Image (cartoon, rainbow, N blue to C red):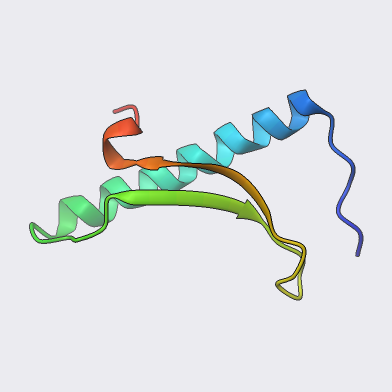
Length: 66
């Protein structure tokens, strides 16, 4: 399956959606354990077979909006 060609606006929209999901997950995990060691997140696009990686966004827990 071929990854669709995205224009810049579509890519930015999906990067925001993926970042929001990553932040939600990271905040949830951090709230469950006082010693949760992870504070960084990154989002990438991958093909079904795990190839064709394309970086979308990254940040830290403090970058995440509450």
